[in-house]
Length: 162
Image (cartoon, rainbow, N blue to C red; front, side, top):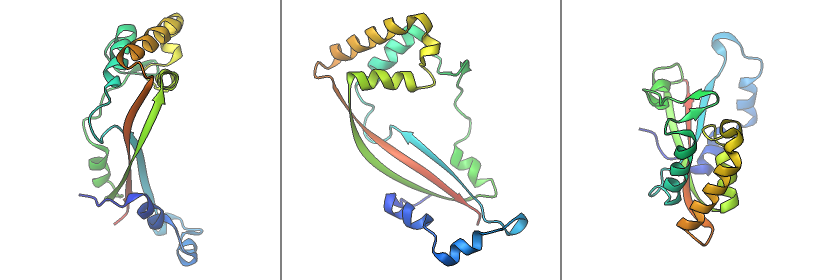
């Protein structure tokens, strides 16, 4: 199980002093120092935002329930990335995480859907304008204030060689 470093801990962990920077210069082969990292933005803190089901319902009405990715569909991996790293040469895994609150407007939430791989303008094609109109209306029917709050947890897996 990893320890929670926090944002300052991650900065301290990866800030090299002059001696450490020298160790990294011109290293190849077995003497090289390597690390892998994965940063994910996940909705983990607190309950799923109430507007998430509104967005999912409209997306499903236009694109179906299978999660899209580009021209195909996304399948959840069988194994957690942390477990994959633990079996790799980068098996020393530490996690850092931090939460931040985000408040979005209707326009920002609609725009966000177009930036996701599972609801791009290309996938919606000629139905884009109708999707945008229906999503905007459904969000406003859900909450007339037009402000939608969410807590986002950002997690970084830091994997180094033992």
